[in-house]
Length: 360
Image (cartoon, rainbow, N blue to C red; front, top):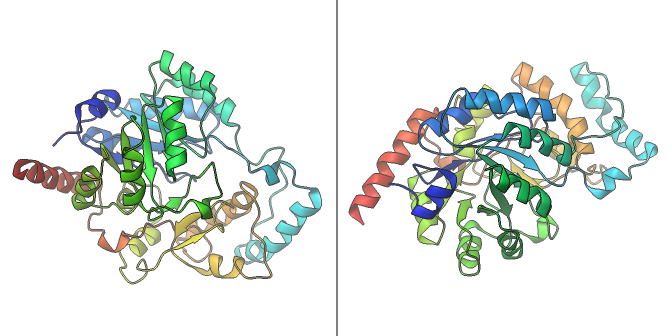
């Protein structure tokens, strides 16, 4: 089974499968290249990388696959509140996190000049590296950036959480649009309204957007198997993006403890939306970090200040394979996960999609 001819040609896909990009350092060259080599579109979450790191990582992926792949960035790299954060406010957030740092034997981080890499500067790395695809979330790049991508032969994929965002991306002239429903693990990449006010389901968003835009749609959110891919395509999507299913694979950069948690059907049966991880709304498994930082006496810092403080806790937790003070991304369909490596997952998707196509 292949994608429809238009999307297949635009993204050079053999299968209607896109691997969701993972930010925060849990994307890997191996995962991205393996998915692409298996006929899907592998993706690398590059939003924390410097321009030089983007260039080097793109080279590494290209060295392991001659198929198409995507590098993913965040357009809005700071919430407005983070740009105007006072020193007193920073110290207040630091005091909130100090008990966790003390518990793990860590020093609190000093305030940086910027809490996150500049999207515009990262794009210079993208222009030099020329990955086959640039995917992006949290906004729409300027028309100059989109035109430069087109001139350099870089396809572009934007993410929408509402019909209005899908229409805006359609008008911007991107190559494809990821319609991401609230079932998805990871961040809600809303950019026209607050994420809490943009909680459409995948099925509602895909079929409503498909009736209003010309750009090919990639469905995302709550899709972990061929049944989900087929259902999404019946609603008007040209392909489907799977995140949690690939995060659970051994090739991803998350911890073994997180992976095992994803296969614990009871633990992942009730995921939650939270701003605890980074300051932006994301879906994951409830743990101590969420329970304590969502207390009425606490305040969540804006993005990326919250991520600045959570990052060292996450790193320390990964080194010790702990799950109580880190981010545990998971989508609502995680209880249906079955595969622990990319080969197994892609083989199952290919076989099931081929059978569905043959029966149609």
